[in-house]
Image 1: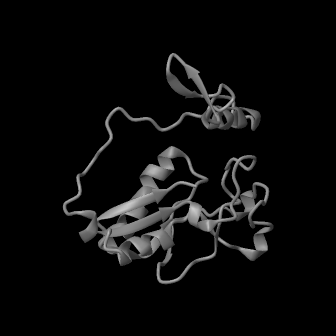
Image 2: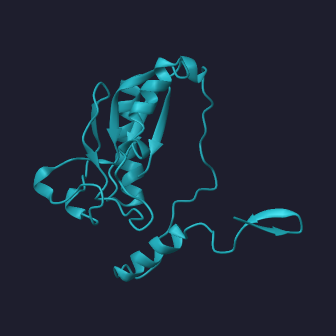
Length: 180
C-alpha cells in the first residue's frame, strides 16, 4: 500500500523500519550498563579492492551463529534468548556438510523474525550454489564462527586477528560476514 503524495509513492505512515538500534540501546540501559551502547563507527575504514573477479575468488563465510550444544537448553527456532549457548573463542568447521548452528544466543528481533530457515542467516548452501554456477570461484574449505559476547576492543584485538589468520590459512580472497 502506498501514499500518493505529490506524485511520489511513499509507503504508508505505519510502514516504517524497525528501530533496531534504538531498541538495542534501550535494552543495554535496562540491563544496568549505565551508559548507552556505543556502536562501532570509524572515520577511516580500510578497504582492499579484489585482486581478481568473484568468479575466480575463493569465498570464506564468517558467522556469529553458534554450534548446537545439547546441554545448554533450548536453542531451537523460536527459542527465547539463551546466553548459555554463547561461545567465547573463534571456531571453524568444514563447509563440506551442513552444520547444526543456532542463533538463540544472539539478541535478535524475536517479534519480527524467526530462526526457522537457517539459509536466511547462514548462506553456506547459497555459496555452494554460486560456486556451482561459476558466479564465485569456490567456497573456502571451512567457515568460521565469530563470538558475540565481547567488547569491541576484544573483538578487534583477539577475535578479528584469529579470524583473519584462519581466512588467510584457507587462502580465501574474500569473506562474507553474516552477523546474526
